Length: 197
Image 1 (cartoon, rainbow, N blue to C red):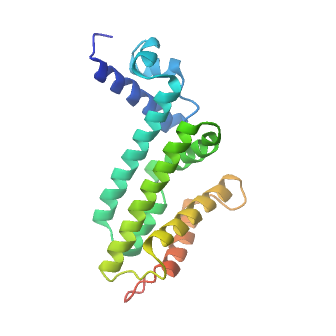
Image 2: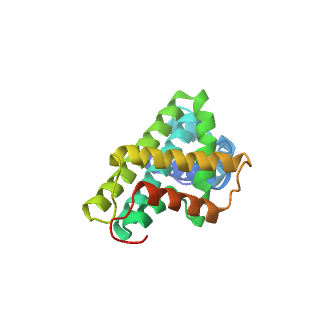
Image 3: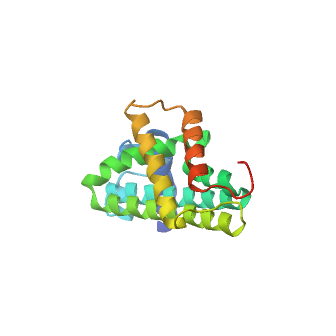
């Protein structure tokens, strides 16, 4: 590999870690794989990051930010029940997010840095859902029986809980069923005012 400035090489390593994480999971990100994917020497990881662990945390954080940006775009293109639903169910192209989120949730119990990023990601997700609910209320397409914030936490808990049940085989992991179940609860929580949604 030719000469790269420090920031460019760090970005190269980070992008390689993100690519591996998206396709194989958090634990699958190894120094060897990052080096192969990026074309950089393994030693560059410790030159640009304090450890492989920090690189992995930064890669996960970058993925969380990418997901948040996609959610913001979704908020601008959909409204009401459909907008809220789209923030709770991953599209087929992003199915890796559910699996990655599960894995990080388990690993975060042993790693304080990862725990902090996970909590940050949950709060970021919550904020976007809360804003979407508030927008729907302001547009008179949703009605909230509670605060937008409290309702967002309940809907997130349902989505994460249902995902956990599916992961353990207690309920089917069928995306269509998850979509249907969440849509039913969203309608109960955010009763549209005039539409039959």
